[in-house]
Every structure is written in C-alpha cells, then in structure tokens.
Image (cartoon, rainbow, N blue to C red):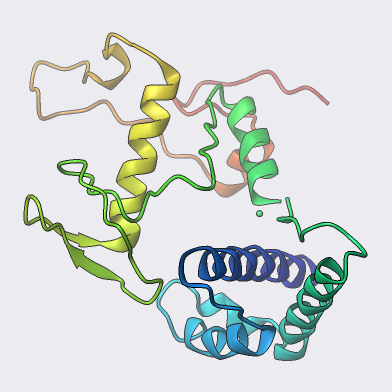
Length: 206
C-alpha cells in the first residue's frame, strides 16, 4: 500500500531527524542512519508501532540513506539543514476538524511535552528517548511517557483556545454523572460527513 509506505517514511524521517538533532545538541553525538536503523528494529516490536512491520524494510532503510546523504550535503555546504517533512496526518486532521466544526491546535515541536510533569509542572533536565516510564522528583507522580506528553499537549491546546465558560463540557442531565452521548455513526457516514455528531442530518455539498 503506497500511502502507508509514504506515511511510514515521513514518520521515520521526522523521528530520525529529531533524534539526530537532539543527540547532537545535548550530547554532542553524531548519529548515522545505521544507528537509527538499530532503533527501528526495536520500534517495530514496540506496542503502538507494529504498523512499521507492514512496510518493506528496504523502503525504510533507503529513507535513512537519503537522510544520511542530506546531512552529507549540508556539512559539505551544498544545501541547507535537512527539514522536517509535512506527518499528511496533520493535513487530514485539520480538514476533518474543519468539517465538524472543531479546532486543531499545533504545538511547537520543541515543547518539552515528555519532560514536563503534567501534575506539578516540574521539568526534567534530561529524559532519554528509551525511557518510557519516569517518576517526578518533585511531586512523586509516576508517569507513562506518552500519556504524560498527551496531557501536557492537551493543556497547551486549552490555553491556546482561550477562556471558555465550560458549557460544552457540562452534561445536560439531572444526574451529574450522566452525560449526553452523541448518536453512533457508521464508518460510511463519518467519511461522507452527511451525519453530524449529534445524529442530525447535515447538508451535503458536492
């Protein structure tokens, strides 16, 4: 499936570029595509990244070679520093959000979402990429790296949206533990956009 292949290569390019940049910035490490390839083997066995196994290994290793060549050209002053590729996922997410009246907030890619304690706000000086669980030295909260990052990103998004009165989050029911849930949508309805989240018909624009 070419779309999946291109999506995986974009993800790997951006991930590898971030790791190489951070490694050099904070530790003075000069990593190569071969170094990243060893991590790629581990990522394929990491829960949530199994989809990498569905892409030919030669396709991904070639992408790492292309990045090596981009760095070589940069250090030879033939071109500028390698840039991040535009994660297509964001484009699709923004498009769908606009269709359903939602807002997508983009966070600065250098925001320390993983190193910042979502409980008390303490920021670690360093957090290695292979550390998936950590404990805040200030408040003692145990964190899953990805869940903690998601909480911090959510907080940023809420601040960016500005003040609100909370009406959208209140349940329209006498029982405060009961929320009004939207009517279920079929996959076809969600793709076409002909049914809104509350189950009412929506005008279809062809």
